[in-house]
Image (cartoon, rainbow, N blue to C red):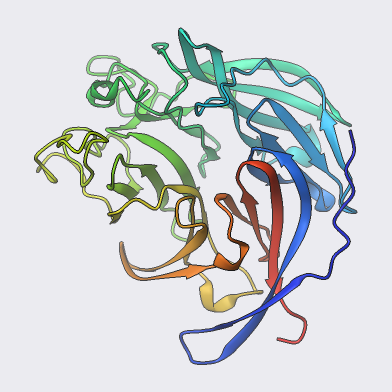
Length: 369
């Protein structure tokens, strides 16, 4: 089924910058009517790929036509849970090899896991579909999958995995892949320089551990810093700087409370566990994470953009060294849960709104500014 691009005048907004000057920007709807979209990725020539949690991959052409891509692997989707199709990531050499990577929930309610598959995109079809990695052990219930995937500078893949909600102690178990970031090669094999590659004290694929449900992952292309954010329970959402082999504490330390109102842990710090760079109490439910660099909003260069599902906005975080020195709310006029945030090579910002009837919205400066 094909949908046409919205033929509407973009919404014009002005914002006051920290310098006191005024910058006008436009919010342009690129596509709408999407079914619980989760992320957007960019292809050469101005095309987009969008995942929908029920298991659909959509291709949006430069002129706004939306088509469905066939050949997507079977996805475990529970409407009332968090399972489904998550990230789509084009290969850095996509123009030559047409390769993409998909992250999704595999299995069923009684036994499911986060899985990564590689395929070639030919027209509107996936071909040569290959499963390259599946998180182990499997878990019950459709909760806490993680699901973010990025390329590191050395060409390896970094994947976030959730701890499965009812299995939170597994986040501290280095032999389990629940509640971790996992580093693999593009064929699914495990790099020999991973922190536990010798298999003596943990699973060789583990890169970092002690995570709850990480749904934000990005690489700063200038500094090389890897940023990750994850959902806390009632409060305690975290933004972390990742370094290999590090323990980020969940559930032994946390700034959040359990949903019952009880303590998850009485401790917020431990000498052998890393502190977050930033945490939120109450929760903002972070989803989507990008580092901004571009000519369209140069005053934001180096900032982090974090989607906030609960607050229905984007948070811009100003970084100095390894600390956050300022935070501001953006794009709240959309009044939508923000599921994903991405930055194009030309400096445009793309937002994905959550739920049935989700939208892809492009943010760019107004020509008048």
